Image 1 (cartoon, rainbow, N blue to C red):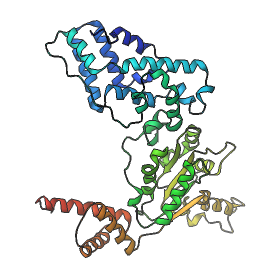
Image 2 (tube, rainbow, N blue to C red; image 1 turned 180 degrees about the vertical axis):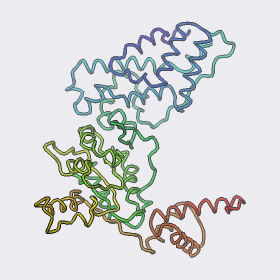
Image 3 (cartoon, rainbow, N blue to C red; image 1 turned 90 degrees about the vertical axis):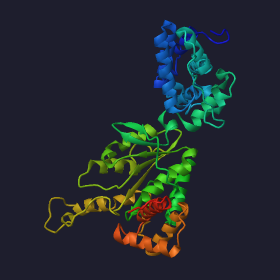
Image 4 (cartoon, one colour; image 1 turned 180 degrees about the horizontal axis):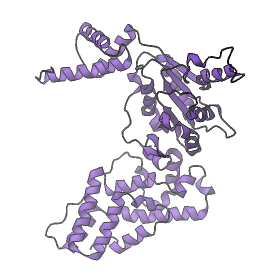
Length: 432
């Protein structure tokens, strides 16, 4: 083994000595690295080759270098330091906590400096192989969130830079994912959120401006309103909310998708998000309530507030096809002979006015023919579909008649079908 590299035992010591950042090595890649070190200590040739192959495969699956994995894991790690430094400056933290971070960064840098070539060399020596195993090595991106650590000569001197990162981007799931969903009492990251862009949504410019402006208030830590996007199906309400994430994700915006069946957890979700550096849109799609729905009460607490102060970094954006979110039947209307509740009309009014509890209501009218064709032309340009304008419009009208009527969703479906049809024709295939 080369005298210029730390010994296997020293690397094991460094890994075992972590005080706060143990989570960095609890990922399958980190666990594979520790298993490889254990195998190298046993000097069993077969175990060494198997352990190296497993570590190599784990890195290849995620398509990242060992160094990139370590840095990203440090940035995402949820530990007492990364949590507390988001709300408190480094100078005001307990000195022992800062000392622990300094110690861990020194230890992690030693692991960072262990290259694929070094591990391959050790495995070849111990297994007495004629050919060294292929070393796993990838170039580190020049621009990446952890560039400051990649470029830092002594990591223990980068505590302040690391603190600034946590204060700006947070840690844990909220640093790793821009879109999340609430499931089984936990936040679950969404690796591939909908890539829809706001500029793809045509025909509702005033509504877009109002929603973007309200979101900018949220990001600037000014009072922002809860928003109800109400209107016909297929008008782009949900796409508009998702598009906000793609426009403002770099600015710290996060989207938490919440199903209507989980609305009872809304107060708990808001409390978990309170004080986190990112700004959150809790997105509820296709919102409506049934009679005596317990979710109604949970939603009302968040919209109207309670004894607990409003979380300034959280808003609710909900879409609905109904102006009155609580279903009402003619039988619900009070009649003179009704005596079951003296002020029954007040109850009905409370249900009907629930949508008014959203500070901002944006209405999406059905698309007329001119708006529908405008959307079609816009999407055709984006998809680089070059056909006669009259032919495009004729086909689009036929599609709307035969399918779901005129809407942004119908236009998108038409363009996707037309794009596939033209691609098959260009490739010499018959689409029918």
